[in-house]
Length: 242
Ligand code: SF4
Ligand code: SF4
Image 1 (cartoon, rainbow, N blue to C red):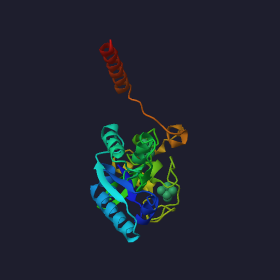
Image 2: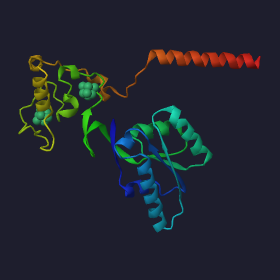
Image 3: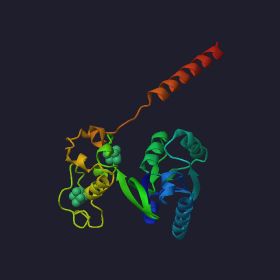
């Protein structure tokens, strides 16, 4: 999941000072699970903003909504319509950065502000604690490293580790962080694949990562079905006109 953390209320409030009608929009998926931007957080942020602005005698109408996902048209398009119909002046998105980008791309003239700081792709290791586990490099090599990611979990993203700096299983960069390569070595011992670590992982082509610029994934089957549907709709429309 994408892990995010709510921004401080003061920072959020500073984004909205120039508006009189704002929609606080939560996301029912990752942002909900990591307790940053779901339905409950929408209520808390909206209430905090109302109180904050009331103290300054500023009149502002704050609408609240939480949609299933802020990264898919199916859920986003209806809220865009609502924002237009309700003459919303700005949206505060409590979804991850993807949600903010997606809304901003669709709402030409309505500003969209981030209510959370998007952190990483990770998992909960205990209630309330998430750690980064994947850096979305675009060319997964977990089959070589026992299912533990050296890109995300080694502070130096070393592909042929360890670096030799770890102490008591902790990383030399930060003693609060487990050495990713120690985890890999232990894991590969446990699953009987430790010999594979003698193979050198060759230098990578990082163009599949964000270093190669914004990426896209195209599912050809879905794409061609969609194009076919559009063509059929176009034909049906022109037949109706005739
Ligand atoms: S190797 Fe790349 S895709 Fe695989 S877990 Fe690591 S960062 Fe993610
Ligand atoms: S101590 Fe471990 S996690 Fe830290 S940089 Fe070295 S190999 Fe990577």
